[in-house]
Amino acid sequence: MFTFALSADETRDTVLSCDPAVSETDDETLSAFRRDWDESALTLTGEPTRWRVKALTHEEMVNAERSAGIHRRSELGAKLYQVQLSFEDDDERARWHDDLTLRERKALTEHVLYIDRWMREFVEVGVMVIDGEGNPQPALEAIERIRPAHLQTTVLTELCLRVRMISTMDLEKKT
Amino acid sequence: MIIAGVWLSRSGRAWSCQDCDQSPELRRRRGNCGVEPFGRGLSHLRDGRVPGYRIAPDSDPEFAEESFDRCPVAGSMAFADIYQIYRALKVDGLTLADIIRRPTSGLVEALSALGHSSRLAHQRDMEAAHGDPS
Image (tube, each protein chain N blue to C red):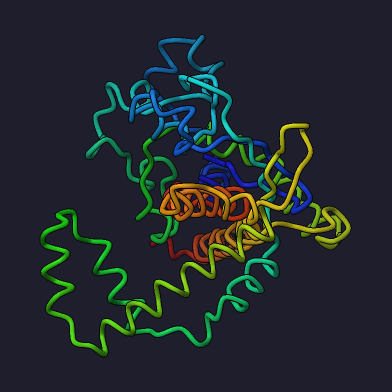
């Protein structure tokens, strides 16, 4: 609760729950860490990468969405993307995807690309990575060097959630 | 939680949590209430949550539809900074830029929610003053 910052000049340093250095931490603790950012409960097996997350103004958030192409994105793709996320079973999701028409598949792919651009815009404005000497550096370049490459999306997703968390009221916690 | 501050202050009484009543130590720590101590022993708990109208009787229906899984008094205390900013904007006539040079999206959203609920609370007061307590 009340995790967002008041000023867009505020920053917070953090590690990510998907960092290999915290992989021996149990799922429940990792889940709590994603909510409260309390690193003391994590089990570390090495030196995790540290990230500096900045809160965004409303204008910065809107600009990031606009640069990613929110006004050109496919509404059909957005709807299909939500449906895709609702599947818990991979097999079911694959069968659902197989039944889509070519037009629907194209719309879905376009939306996935929009989400990827949106995450990159968000991270570019709101995140720095702390290098070995303790200096903040542009995060996107560091993310693009992550191997295996599929982990880049996981890192981007978690960083975006963190930027949102300190920039906006957490909708689920409003009640 | 931030809206709770508006309706709690209007209702003229604070939330009474049995656990806190029985344990002064817990009351002092109320800012850190978790789901367990908050929910235990509360008769009007529904699926681990308490409806808003129990906390602030005669609140606006919009607030009554909200529900809580942790102490709303502690929650609204956590927003003390934002209430002060809201007060400075409404009473002292300052602008947001006078107080915070680059406000976050969350702060703007919180002030907007406070403004909306305060208007509803004022409306309830007017209705009550004119004999329409519904």
